[in-house]
Image (cartoon, rainbow, N blue to C red):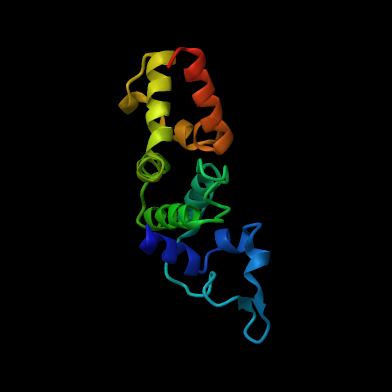
Length: 160
């Protein structure tokens, strides 16, 4: 987690610079970049196509802790998720492969949420976890804090 966190936090990439939290990074006016340690070093170079993949996945991959997408890192999970996404995009992985990996990583950080998601899909759609579209799971309907609450409520209403 912390290697990916450091990668995203330090990598000079437009996603981190466009984050609504970038203003809180401060600015070093002598050198014209954000506070040292935030997007201050070119660690990964993405082609325009890879950058588009990373941006799309980051904007649509949520975390149950805060309800923010990876494009808005505001915690260790957010930075780590963004680091994973950027690293995989830089290596040419497809969006589907990145979403699959993102959900697996989130499962380590938030196991109860994804156990409930798997149960939800089994109960409501009779799908096993390996049949579920991980892009859907990564989105706000299932991986945001409000999505996790809705899944828990649906399971409770179903008697679980």
